[in-house]
Length: 282
Picture 1: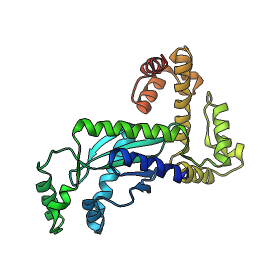
Picture 2: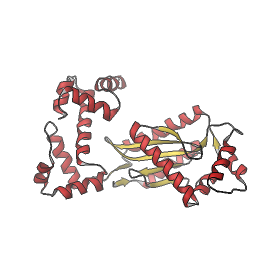
Picture 3: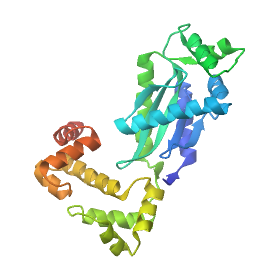
Picture 4: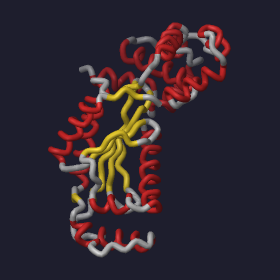
């Protein structure tokens, strides 16, 4: 997945977030690769974990699980890393595609002294890791109660909306993808097939699949489905068309299939989406 990034603006936003919260944040792309962190340095305990290949693997696995959960829930999540520290991940979207993530964390929600020291000491023993000044290092971990943690999460969500609205992080849609978008928009009511696309754009099936995999990190079929869902959202919010009509106008088949696909992709029913969109404009 290729992104266009305004790195200086991103760093400025993350610096402001840190100035207010004193919490480190990181941005990852849709392939779970880190783009930027602020501050650059990890917290002391995380620096130690990242200093060894075996413990770093545990950190990466914790991150991967968080990204996958974020994808599944299609929203901001609070989770616990392998050391028992609290972290938050929020998705970055380009239309209906998750193109990246913002993460912050290495916090504890257990008031000091709590059980954090013993829990991390036990983990270090499991990892055969000896840290002489462990108690001092643990004392540097920031404590936030649950209410403060969720307030931080909402603040970070606001940052993601700002980033998306101003397209500070966005998909790098090449000329081919832009033309393909136009074609899909014009033919949403129809069944769109790979042979038709290959004929329209004078390309091979292999090249078509490679372009989607490299540029958007998803299959062609899923991309078309998301385009249909995007159109359905617009029609639900902006028109009073019955669901059966919207199903036909988006190429999502008959009423029951449309309702099933819409709920699976968005997490709510089409009727509930319409109600929510109307209430937001009041």
